[in-house]
Structure formats: structure tokens, C-alpha cells
Image (cartoon, rainbow, N blue to C red; front, side, top):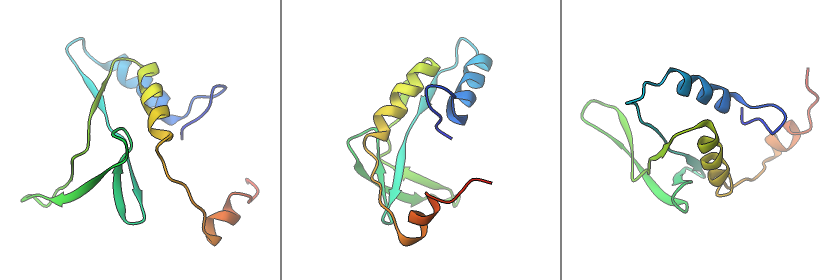
Amino acid sequence: MIGDDAEPGIYLLAAEDIFARAQPNHRIFVSLYEIYCNSLFDLLNQRQPLQPREDGNRQMNICGLTWHEIRSVSGLQRVTDRGATQRRTGSTSANELSLHAPMR
């Protein structure tokens, strides 16, 4: 999904397509949040806690989430890299084994 320097992931490939189709008057914004231990955190705002809320149309909204304008694929990469440094990671007995499972 994320990719690396040698091979871009789906995020960057999708961003290339979005920027190729965008009109000059379009503005593109991104946000990045994490669900960790049944809580939401804004990864682009120092892991500030977020609140999910359901509106009158039964649509879920993430209150407090920040949006950041990007102007290029490299801008998306910088934002994604910055957010990745804020992520929490852990392992369980289930995913610990899946990390070492052979690819088929």
C-alpha cells in the first residue's frame, strides 16, 4: 500500500492520477488518522485525540481532524512520512505470526 523508494505504493500511484485529472482551480487536501486501542488520533496534529460523531443523516464525522492542502505527489509523500512517525505499533499473537508467513 505505502510502497518504498524503489516501487511506489497505491497511495502515490493514486495521487499521481488525482493530480493528472485535477483542474487548475481544484484544491486537494489530505488528513491522516489512526484507530488504536478503540481510540482515534490525528497523526498530523501531534496525535491529538479525535471524536467520532454521527450526524442527523446517520453519517459518521471525525470531529477535530485536521486537513492539509497538498500541491503535488511529493507533498503527499512528505505528509504521509510525517504522519507515519506518529503511528503506534504493537503486535498480538495473531499478527506476530502473520509477519513471518510466507507469501504465496
